[in-house]
Image (cartoon, rainbow, N blue to C red):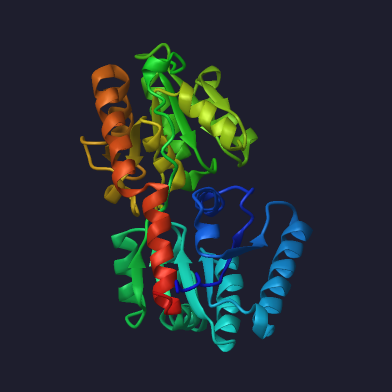
Length: 362
Protein backbone atom coordinates (compact mmCIF):
# COMPACT_ATOMS: atom_id res chain seq x y z
CA UNK A 1 0.00 0.00 0.00
CA UNK A 2 1.38 3.40 -0.97
CA UNK A 3 2.17 5.67 2.00
CA UNK A 4 -0.10 8.68 2.29
CA UNK A 5 1.54 11.99 1.49
CA UNK A 6 2.47 13.89 4.65
CA UNK A 7 0.23 16.69 5.86
CA UNK A 8 2.01 20.02 5.54
CA UNK A 9 1.08 23.35 7.07
CA UNK A 10 2.82 26.08 5.07
CA UNK A 11 2.86 29.63 6.44
CA UNK A 12 3.88 32.86 4.74
CA UNK A 13 2.63 36.01 3.10
CA UNK A 14 -0.66 36.04 1.21
CA UNK A 15 -0.09 34.41 -2.23
CA UNK A 16 -2.05 37.17 -3.97
CA UNK A 17 0.25 39.79 -2.42
CA UNK A 18 3.52 41.32 -3.49
CA UNK A 19 7.11 40.17 -3.26
CA UNK A 20 9.16 37.06 -3.90
CA UNK A 21 7.54 34.79 -1.31
CA UNK A 22 4.05 35.47 -2.67
CA UNK A 23 5.27 34.82 -6.21
CA UNK A 24 6.99 31.57 -5.22
CA UNK A 25 3.95 30.27 -3.32
CA UNK A 26 1.73 31.02 -6.30
CA UNK A 27 4.11 29.10 -8.58
CA UNK A 28 4.27 26.11 -6.21
CA UNK A 29 0.49 25.99 -5.96
CA UNK A 30 0.06 26.21 -9.74
CA UNK A 31 2.71 23.51 -10.14
CA UNK A 32 0.62 21.02 -8.15
CA UNK A 33 2.76 20.79 -4.99
CA UNK A 34 -0.16 21.52 -2.67
CA UNK A 35 -2.15 18.57 -3.99
CA UNK A 36 0.86 16.28 -4.31
CA UNK A 37 2.03 16.78 -0.72
CA UNK A 38 -1.29 17.63 0.99
CA UNK A 39 -0.32 21.22 1.79
CA UNK A 40 -2.57 23.64 3.63
CA UNK A 41 -1.50 27.28 3.35
CA UNK A 42 -1.98 29.88 6.10
CA UNK A 43 -1.25 33.56 5.47
CA UNK A 44 0.45 35.43 8.30
CA UNK A 45 1.06 38.66 6.41
CA UNK A 46 -0.96 40.76 4.01
CA UNK A 47 -0.23 44.06 2.26
CA UNK A 48 -2.11 47.05 3.64
CA UNK A 49 -2.22 49.42 6.59
CA UNK A 50 -1.25 48.56 10.15
CA UNK A 51 -4.64 47.12 11.05
CA UNK A 52 -4.69 44.94 7.94
CA UNK A 53 -1.25 43.57 8.74
CA UNK A 54 -2.13 43.06 12.40
CA UNK A 55 -5.31 41.24 11.46
CA UNK A 56 -3.45 38.94 9.07
CA UNK A 57 -0.79 38.15 11.67
CA UNK A 58 -3.38 37.45 14.36
CA UNK A 59 -5.55 35.38 12.04
CA UNK A 60 -2.58 33.35 10.86
CA UNK A 61 -1.46 32.74 14.43
CA UNK A 62 -4.91 31.53 15.51
CA UNK A 63 -5.25 29.23 12.49
CA UNK A 64 -1.80 27.75 13.08
CA UNK A 65 -2.37 27.29 16.79
CA UNK A 66 -5.72 25.61 16.16
CA UNK A 67 -4.03 23.12 13.83
CA UNK A 68 -1.34 22.36 16.38
CA UNK A 69 -3.57 21.76 19.40
CA UNK A 70 -5.99 19.42 17.63
CA UNK A 71 -4.31 16.00 17.46
CA UNK A 72 -6.56 14.81 14.61
CA UNK A 73 -5.73 17.96 12.57
CA UNK A 74 -2.06 18.36 13.51
CA UNK A 75 0.32 18.57 10.53
CA UNK A 76 3.38 16.38 10.21
CA UNK A 77 5.46 19.34 9.10
CA UNK A 78 5.20 23.11 9.49
CA UNK A 79 6.97 24.89 6.63
CA UNK A 80 7.53 28.63 7.20
CA UNK A 81 8.68 31.14 4.60
CA UNK A 82 10.60 33.77 6.55
CA UNK A 83 12.78 36.81 6.03
CA UNK A 84 14.02 39.39 8.53
CA UNK A 85 12.63 41.56 11.35
CA UNK A 86 8.86 41.15 11.82
CA UNK A 87 8.71 38.25 9.38
CA UNK A 88 11.31 36.36 11.38
CA UNK A 89 9.60 37.18 14.69
CA UNK A 90 6.26 35.80 13.49
CA UNK A 91 7.65 32.65 11.91
CA UNK A 92 10.14 31.80 14.64
CA UNK A 93 7.35 31.88 17.24
CA UNK A 94 5.11 29.66 15.12
CA UNK A 95 7.94 27.21 14.49
CA UNK A 96 8.68 27.03 18.23
CA UNK A 97 5.03 26.23 18.91
CA UNK A 98 5.12 23.60 16.17
CA UNK A 99 8.14 21.91 17.72
CA UNK A 100 6.41 21.95 21.11
CA UNK A 101 3.50 20.13 19.45
CA UNK A 102 5.85 17.46 18.06
CA UNK A 103 5.90 18.63 14.43
CA UNK A 104 8.87 18.66 12.10
CA UNK A 105 9.71 22.23 11.07
CA UNK A 106 11.22 23.88 7.99
CA UNK A 107 12.65 27.40 8.07
CA UNK A 108 12.66 28.61 4.44
CA UNK A 109 15.02 31.57 4.27
CA UNK A 110 14.16 34.48 1.97
CA UNK A 111 15.36 38.06 1.70
CA UNK A 112 18.74 39.52 0.87
CA UNK A 113 18.89 41.44 4.15
CA UNK A 114 18.93 38.42 6.47
CA UNK A 115 22.72 38.36 6.90
CA UNK A 116 22.77 41.95 8.16
CA UNK A 117 19.69 41.32 10.30
CA UNK A 118 21.31 38.30 11.95
CA UNK A 119 24.81 39.68 12.41
CA UNK A 120 24.63 43.48 12.61
CA UNK A 121 21.10 44.68 13.32
CA UNK A 122 20.20 42.32 16.15
CA UNK A 123 21.27 42.45 19.78
CA UNK A 124 22.86 39.59 21.67
CA UNK A 125 19.57 38.01 22.74
CA UNK A 126 18.02 38.22 19.28
CA UNK A 127 21.14 36.72 17.68
CA UNK A 128 20.88 33.81 20.09
CA UNK A 129 17.20 33.37 19.22
CA UNK A 130 17.96 33.46 15.50
CA UNK A 131 20.69 30.84 15.93
CA UNK A 132 18.41 28.74 18.15
CA UNK A 133 15.61 28.88 15.55
CA UNK A 134 17.90 27.83 12.73
CA UNK A 135 19.57 25.03 14.68
CA UNK A 136 16.36 23.63 16.18
CA UNK A 137 14.50 23.57 12.88
CA UNK A 138 14.35 20.12 11.31
CA UNK A 139 15.65 21.73 8.13
CA UNK A 140 16.68 25.16 6.91
CA UNK A 141 16.07 25.75 3.21
CA UNK A 142 18.43 28.24 1.57
CA UNK A 143 17.90 29.53 -1.95
CA UNK A 144 21.55 29.28 -3.01
CA UNK A 145 24.82 27.64 -1.99
CA UNK A 146 26.10 31.02 -0.84
CA UNK A 147 23.20 31.48 1.57
CA UNK A 148 23.60 27.88 2.77
CA UNK A 149 27.25 28.58 3.58
CA UNK A 150 26.23 31.63 5.61
CA UNK A 151 23.65 29.64 7.60
CA UNK A 152 26.20 26.93 8.37
CA UNK A 153 28.73 29.50 9.57
CA UNK A 154 26.20 31.40 11.69
CA UNK A 155 24.39 28.33 13.08
CA UNK A 156 26.84 25.39 12.83
CA UNK A 157 24.34 22.80 14.08
CA UNK A 158 21.68 23.70 11.51
CA UNK A 159 20.72 21.12 8.90
CA UNK A 160 20.65 22.98 5.59
CA UNK A 161 19.39 22.11 2.11
CA UNK A 162 19.54 24.25 -1.04
CA UNK A 163 16.29 24.59 -2.94
CA UNK A 164 16.19 27.45 -5.45
CA UNK A 165 13.14 29.49 -6.26
CA UNK A 166 10.98 28.09 -9.03
CA UNK A 167 9.54 29.87 -12.02
CA UNK A 168 7.10 28.78 -14.70
CA UNK A 169 8.73 28.42 -18.10
CA UNK A 170 6.33 30.47 -20.19
CA UNK A 171 6.54 31.12 -23.92
CA UNK A 172 9.70 32.97 -24.74
CA UNK A 173 9.12 36.69 -25.14
CA UNK A 174 11.92 37.59 -27.52
CA UNK A 175 12.26 40.48 -29.90
CA UNK A 176 10.81 38.40 -32.71
CA UNK A 177 7.30 38.46 -31.27
CA UNK A 178 6.83 42.06 -32.34
CA UNK A 179 6.21 43.53 -28.89
CA UNK A 180 9.76 44.18 -27.65
CA UNK A 181 10.61 47.87 -27.94
CA UNK A 182 14.11 48.96 -28.86
CA UNK A 183 15.89 50.66 -25.97
CA UNK A 184 13.28 49.70 -23.36
CA UNK A 185 14.91 48.75 -20.01
CA UNK A 186 12.71 47.10 -17.39
CA UNK A 187 13.19 47.05 -13.62
CA UNK A 188 10.79 44.90 -11.57
CA UNK A 189 10.83 45.15 -7.80
CA UNK A 190 10.34 47.55 -4.94
CA UNK A 191 11.39 50.99 -6.18
CA UNK A 192 13.88 51.98 -3.49
CA UNK A 193 17.54 52.85 -3.03
CA UNK A 194 18.45 49.35 -1.77
CA UNK A 195 17.40 47.96 -5.15
CA UNK A 196 19.90 50.20 -6.94
CA UNK A 197 17.30 52.54 -8.42
CA UNK A 198 19.50 55.63 -7.98
CA UNK A 199 22.36 53.95 -9.85
CA UNK A 200 19.95 52.85 -12.56
CA UNK A 201 18.68 56.40 -13.02
CA UNK A 202 22.27 57.65 -13.20
CA UNK A 203 23.10 55.03 -15.82
CA UNK A 204 20.01 55.93 -17.86
CA UNK A 205 20.94 59.62 -17.73
CA UNK A 206 24.46 58.83 -18.94
CA UNK A 207 23.17 56.68 -21.80
CA UNK A 208 20.26 58.87 -22.91
CA UNK A 209 22.27 61.05 -25.37
CA UNK A 210 23.72 57.96 -27.05
CA UNK A 211 20.45 56.01 -27.26
CA UNK A 212 17.57 58.25 -28.38
CA UNK A 213 15.05 55.40 -28.00
CA UNK A 214 16.07 54.61 -24.43
CA UNK A 215 13.17 54.31 -22.01
CA UNK A 216 13.43 53.11 -18.42
CA UNK A 217 10.44 51.39 -16.81
CA UNK A 218 10.42 51.17 -13.00
CA UNK A 219 7.68 48.69 -12.17
CA UNK A 220 6.91 48.29 -8.49
CA UNK A 221 5.69 50.02 -5.36
CA UNK A 222 7.61 52.64 -3.40
CA UNK A 223 7.83 56.40 -3.00
CA UNK A 224 7.12 57.00 -6.67
CA UNK A 225 6.76 60.76 -6.35
CA UNK A 226 10.29 61.02 -4.96
CA UNK A 227 11.69 58.89 -7.77
CA UNK A 228 9.79 60.94 -10.33
CA UNK A 229 11.55 64.03 -8.95
CA UNK A 230 14.87 62.20 -9.07
CA UNK A 231 14.34 61.38 -12.75
CA UNK A 232 13.39 64.98 -13.51
CA UNK A 233 16.50 66.25 -11.71
CA UNK A 234 18.65 64.06 -13.95
CA UNK A 235 16.95 65.44 -17.05
CA UNK A 236 15.36 62.13 -18.04
CA UNK A 237 11.84 62.60 -16.72
CA UNK A 238 10.40 62.00 -20.18
CA UNK A 239 12.39 58.77 -20.49
CA UNK A 240 11.21 57.18 -17.19
CA UNK A 241 7.92 55.38 -16.64
CA UNK A 242 6.76 54.58 -13.09
CA UNK A 243 4.00 51.98 -13.27
CA UNK A 244 3.40 51.23 -9.60
CA UNK A 245 2.84 47.66 -8.45
CA UNK A 246 1.78 45.24 -11.20
CA UNK A 247 -0.05 41.93 -11.01
CA UNK A 248 1.21 38.85 -12.89
CA UNK A 249 -0.46 39.87 -16.14
CA UNK A 250 1.00 43.36 -15.92
CA UNK A 251 4.50 42.00 -15.26
CA UNK A 252 4.19 39.65 -18.23
CA UNK A 253 3.14 42.55 -20.47
CA UNK A 254 6.11 44.65 -19.36
CA UNK A 255 8.50 41.75 -19.93
CA UNK A 256 7.10 41.30 -23.43
CA UNK A 257 7.79 44.94 -24.25
CA UNK A 258 11.29 45.08 -22.75
CA UNK A 259 14.56 44.71 -24.62
CA UNK A 260 16.62 44.39 -21.43
CA UNK A 261 15.85 43.49 -17.82
CA UNK A 262 17.94 45.20 -15.15
CA UNK A 263 18.15 44.51 -11.41
CA UNK A 264 21.06 46.44 -9.81
CA UNK A 265 20.24 45.56 -6.17
CA UNK A 266 22.65 46.15 -3.28
CA UNK A 267 21.62 42.83 -1.66
CA UNK A 268 19.44 39.91 -2.75
CA UNK A 269 18.55 36.29 -2.13
CA UNK A 270 17.48 34.71 -5.41
CA UNK A 271 14.95 37.20 -6.79
CA UNK A 272 11.86 35.86 -8.52
CA UNK A 273 11.80 38.83 -10.89
CA UNK A 274 15.24 37.87 -12.19
CA UNK A 275 14.16 34.26 -12.81
CA UNK A 276 10.95 35.40 -14.51
CA UNK A 277 12.95 37.61 -16.88
CA UNK A 278 15.34 34.75 -17.62
CA UNK A 279 12.42 32.39 -18.25
CA UNK A 280 11.01 34.93 -20.70
CA UNK A 281 14.27 34.86 -22.66
CA UNK A 282 15.32 38.40 -21.83
CA UNK A 283 18.87 39.71 -21.73
CA UNK A 284 19.60 40.47 -18.07
CA UNK A 285 21.96 42.94 -16.43
CA UNK A 286 22.17 42.52 -12.66
CA UNK A 287 24.45 43.21 -9.72
CA UNK A 288 26.66 40.40 -8.46
CA UNK A 289 25.10 40.04 -5.01
CA UNK A 290 23.46 37.25 -3.02
CA UNK A 291 22.48 34.27 -5.11
CA UNK A 292 22.41 36.14 -8.43
CA UNK A 293 25.91 35.01 -9.57
CA UNK A 294 24.85 31.38 -9.04
CA UNK A 295 22.05 31.81 -11.57
CA UNK A 296 23.64 34.40 -13.85
CA UNK A 297 27.08 33.72 -15.33
CA UNK A 298 28.90 36.71 -16.72
CA UNK A 299 28.87 36.85 -20.51
CA UNK A 300 27.12 33.48 -20.83
CA UNK A 301 23.50 34.02 -19.80
CA UNK A 302 23.64 37.60 -18.56
CA UNK A 303 25.89 40.46 -17.54
CA UNK A 304 26.99 41.08 -13.94
CA UNK A 305 28.14 44.35 -12.45
CA UNK A 306 29.44 45.32 -9.00
CA UNK A 307 26.72 46.72 -6.71
CA UNK A 308 26.45 50.51 -6.34
CA UNK A 309 28.63 51.08 -9.42
CA UNK A 310 26.69 53.31 -11.81
CA UNK A 311 29.55 53.52 -14.30
CA UNK A 312 29.83 49.73 -14.65
CA UNK A 313 26.05 49.48 -14.87
CA UNK A 314 25.93 52.02 -17.69
CA UNK A 315 28.67 50.14 -19.54
CA UNK A 316 26.86 46.80 -19.31
CA UNK A 317 23.56 48.30 -20.41
CA UNK A 318 25.26 49.98 -23.35
CA UNK A 319 26.67 46.62 -24.46
CA UNK A 320 23.29 44.92 -24.64
CA UNK A 321 21.46 47.93 -26.07
CA UNK A 322 24.07 48.20 -28.82
CA UNK A 323 24.17 44.54 -29.83
CA UNK A 324 21.01 42.69 -30.85
CA UNK A 325 22.97 39.47 -31.34
CA UNK A 326 24.28 39.62 -27.78
CA UNK A 327 20.79 40.27 -26.44
CA UNK A 328 19.45 37.22 -28.26
CA UNK A 329 22.34 35.01 -27.11
CA UNK A 330 22.05 36.03 -23.47
CA UNK A 331 18.27 35.63 -23.52
CA UNK A 332 18.41 32.14 -25.05
CA UNK A 333 21.01 30.93 -22.54
CA UNK A 334 19.11 32.50 -19.64
CA UNK A 335 15.94 30.66 -20.61
CA UNK A 336 17.89 27.40 -20.93
CA UNK A 337 19.31 27.92 -17.44
CA UNK A 338 15.81 28.24 -15.98
CA UNK A 339 14.63 25.13 -17.81
CA UNK A 340 17.53 23.10 -16.42
CA UNK A 341 17.69 24.34 -12.83
CA UNK A 342 14.71 26.46 -11.80
CA UNK A 343 11.68 24.85 -13.38
CA UNK A 344 8.50 24.37 -11.37
CA UNK A 345 8.65 20.60 -11.89
CA UNK A 346 12.20 20.31 -10.52
CA UNK A 347 11.60 22.45 -7.43
CA UNK A 348 8.21 20.90 -6.59
CA UNK A 349 9.79 17.47 -6.86
CA UNK A 350 12.62 18.50 -4.54
CA UNK A 351 10.22 19.87 -1.92
CA UNK A 352 8.01 16.79 -2.09
CA UNK A 353 11.07 14.59 -1.49
CA UNK A 354 12.06 16.73 1.50
CA UNK A 355 8.58 16.41 2.99
CA UNK A 356 8.61 12.64 2.59
CA UNK A 357 12.06 12.41 4.13
CA UNK A 358 11.16 14.50 7.18
CA UNK A 359 7.86 12.74 7.72
CA UNK A 360 9.37 9.30 7.25
CA UNK A 361 6.85 8.61 4.48
CA UNK A 362 9.12 7.09 1.85
